[in-house]
Length: 228
Image (cartoon, rainbow, N blue to C red; front, side, top):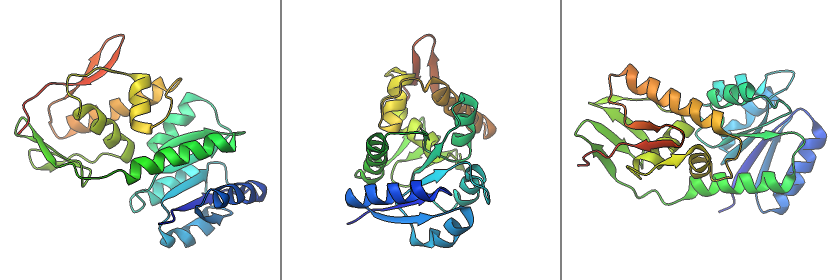
């Protein structure tokens, strides 16, 4: 089945260039020259969204926040902002990746392909219960502590999924980024740390035990706990 990519950017040249590239790669491409037009076309249910941050009508961060509750597909930001703080804002808004302009279309294509592979992988994993209280449903992508849902964003669940399926195994930040994003994680240490911080805060908010342990100077691991 042909997968659909939505490209949202106010620069018509970029829209045209990316539409040609991804159409030749075999994707169905929907374009929107701004946030308002994108909102009108989201009913087409894209499999992945490429979203420019700096747009005059609705900025990409605001648009991402407003659609993330009903759009579960990967959202990849396209932006000229290069600071780590900007990346953290992007991931905090619900984005899944951060592509710096100017970019190589081949690298962008590889990132798109990697995200779609993760989305399309077989979802046959069962619901797993840790210590009788923490329930992780890998099919529904939901987490509950003692019956109370812990609301995780997409990438937060991806990180939890990688760690919880490999209890006791230490992941350095680069390997964890690569495992969760499907790409080379060099230089993304702050992104991983910010996601881990948010996961821990959400666990703490419902009184849940903290399963993600910091291995100082190395990375993170999931505590070896009893699994029912």
